[in-house]
Length: 350
Image (tube, rainbow, N blue to C red; front, side, top):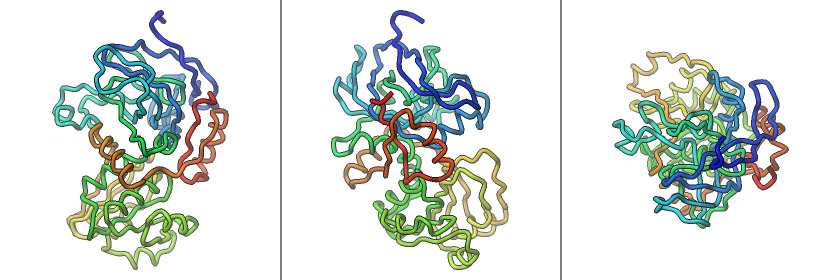
């Protein structure tokens, strides 16, 4: 530890099996291209749980998750031109990339070929470990900071930095819009954003959920139709219906059944990240020239586009704000699908 680092109050996991607890972590000094952000709110993503529990592979501990960060610029480095103290800003799932590969040069930093630097659980270019937004401040290269429009409240903006861009990006890439039939599998943190975006883009939107328990919510959020996937009749009724299906569920599904709902030349796109492989019946792809694809987050430019789109269309996440000492309880509720639709930590309570 050097005199130029700063200590940050945080909440994190000391091991894969331990409850989250208060921690003190060291943040790097502000470099010439860096922005220091006082974190006001941080969303809770299912990925935080997978990561901290070691379900996606071995990780360093202590683990401080959180990649849905909204806050206020507190200081800037000498070379920073994009932001000033007092600006409303956000940070999503990545805080750096190589900047040199073909994807980075094309403005697709999220698909950096050597691998982008994740907001937590990575090692940044200066050799310091990255810790996420379950903390009071963060230091980030200015290129990976987003401007949050004035019309969006910071607490409701936080989940846009992951749940928002994760669903906006594939909808844009696969051309959701007027005349398109779009289905969203799962009405959770990701799914509720996908419904809002698909509707705002002009598509006819169907929610495919395990039950009809959230049907009223789905229709309120913008869905035109709502079906239960536990009912076999759903798959008969909706066969060959959709141009695009966005699967937001982070659990094993019968991919073949959902592919049967995709039109010729349509796509089933996975944005949920289950911990186990998903078997894909190849003939379901071959016989209708269907695509089974995946999509991560968006680029920095696309994320800013998404935030501006949200401001223009009055779109934010549906949130439940919690104090920092309720994070363990919130994680249990996420695992039980007992949240409508995103927990957001009030970081002033750290």
